[in-house]
Length: 332
Image (tube, rainbow, N blue to C red):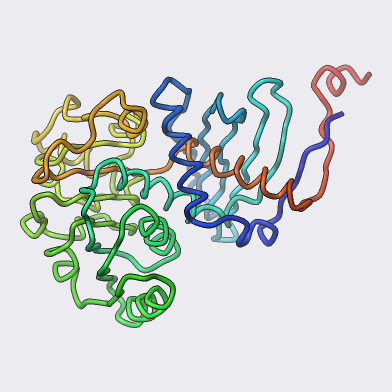
């Protein structure tokens, strides 16, 4: 038998700062750039009741951990549950089991921030945020740890949502955060654009995107979800979290492929390759860059292991026992 730490959602709340998520996730992508294994998500769908079962995984040798997400969404309860198993990368023994939904906006936001740090201009000070949900909150808080933001413009279709979000973030960040009445008003003067939506159509017009802008798109995890115009993909230095995912479920890239605007060779590099120095990031002040962040096991394992270590230091969590297969399968 081996002891494994179980961490509840409440125990994970507030356990780490956004900057700590970013540091852990950056190192995870560095390891991926140096050859660490990771696979895109697999998704099983069900028609009646409607729902899906999704999973993805990664091995981070330097962190000493491996694991990923498995989560269900929909079905009879029309909700979602995220389970994060974490294993020791040397022994294979289970280290922890996390109720993973709590960390989701923070680890995903950290991946976005790593993309900004690798691809946005160093002097970027203005940010457009399309979306006002929990993922938008995680993206903005993480972005503020890697750039000295002065102005943030927030747009989402519901006026009350964007205004309450802006008021909340204006209190928490040094930057001035304001709601605007259209995505165009947010994007047209922005150095950084973050899309955190579930949109099936582009959420801004390409001609509004200024030269030198960086875009992080985190809502493109299905072929039909297309937050970015195909023209933006065409003229940008395009960097996905995983190369394989770009042609599997990165909706805007797939759309640009289908329109004949790009080929698979348009993929500049994976984010990990840029972080590890295996491929260049931004190479001019004028170029447009895109980080396509659809979700991987890289940020999940990196963030989960960081939380596991912090919880262990604080003596949080409950111990559960797992039997190795050599005992359980033989009954010895």
